[in-house]
Image (cartoon, rainbow, N blue to C red; front, side, top):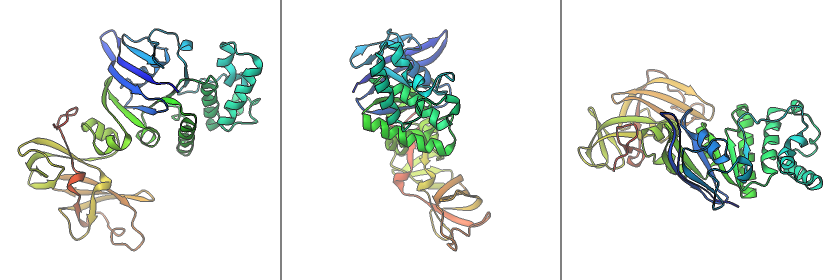
Amino acid sequence: MTRLVLEGLRKTYGPTVAVDRVDLEVAEGELVALLGPSGCGKTTTLRMVAGFIAPTAGRIFIGGTDVSRAPPYARDTGMVFQGYALFPHMTVAENVGFGLEMRRVAKAEREARIAEALRLVRLDGYAERRIAQMSGGQQQRVALARALVVNPGVFLLDEPLSNLDARLRAEVRVEIRALQQRLGLTTLFVTHDQEEALTMADRMVVMNHGRVCQIGPPEELYERPADLFVAGFLGRCNVFRGTVETPGTLRAGAIALPCDGGVPGQTAAMVVRPERVGIDPEAGLLPGRIGMTTYLGGLTDWHVETDAGTVLVTRPTPPPGDRLRRLAPGDIVHLDWAGTAGRLLSPEPNGELA
C-alpha cells in the first residue's frame, strides 16, 4: 500500500487559477473523494496526480517519492477515465493487458495477471469479447481491470460512474468500494455526485473555485458543514438568516428558532436539514401551510410556507390512513426541530462562525 501527499498544489492557465494551493494526504488504503461542481478544479487535481497535467507550483509524493515532474508511466498509478478510453478494435483481454504490454511484461505473466484482474471484476470468460459486445456496466469493469492489472500504488478514478444509468451506478459503486477495501487500494476518486461521495468515501474533499472548502469524513461534512457552500452542495437544506438572540435561539424576523448555540447579537445563517424537521398537524414551534407534497416512495417531501420562509420537510412516508399521509396543499401544520439540528454558519457564502 502507498500513501499519496499533495503539498501546495497549484495550476494556473494564464490569469486563470484552476487549482489553488491544495494540501492533502491520502493514507494507505484510504478512499478520498474530491467533490465539487463543474469547473471547481477536482479533475485538474486528479490529472496532476496522474501526470497528465504539470503543476504550476507545489509537489506530489507517491510512496514518499516526489513525482511532481515524473511522466505518467513512472508514477505507480492506475487510472479509470470518465469515458473509459477503451480500444474498440481490441478484445477485453487486449484492453486489460495494454498497460502491461507497454511495460514489456513477459507474455506468460501478462496472461496470468489479466486473468486475475478479470476475475476480480467478475468478468471471467469475457477475455475474447470485443468491447462493442459489452454493456455499459461491463465496459466499466473492463476499465477497472485495466487500471488494477498494473498493481498500482495509487488508484485514480475520474467520475467513472457518470455514463451509467441510476440502477447500474448504485450497483457498481458498491462493487468498486468493496474491491477497494478488499485490495487495500489508496484511492483518489473524483465525482460531482454527492450521494456517490457520501456512500463510498472514507473522507471527502469539497472544492470550489479551485480551493478546498472542507476536508473530513462524510458524516462530519454533512452534519457540520464549514460554510453555506458546503452545506448546500452536500444535500438539501433549509437556510434561515437572522441574529442570535440568546445562546440557542436565532431571531429571524418575528420568529425565534432553535439553534446550536451562538453569541447574542451575532448575525448568522442557520442550516437545518429537511430530515431533521418534525411536522405535526396540531402542535409545534413554527406554524405553516402546506404548499406542495411530493411522494418519493419511502420518503415524502412537504414544502411548508411559514413566516420564516418556505421550509422543506423530508420524512419517511407515513402508512396509508395516517394523518400525515392525508395532508394536502393548504392544510395547517406545525414544524419543530432540536436545537442541535440548527447549524449556525456565517451569513457569507464561504465564511464560518468562530
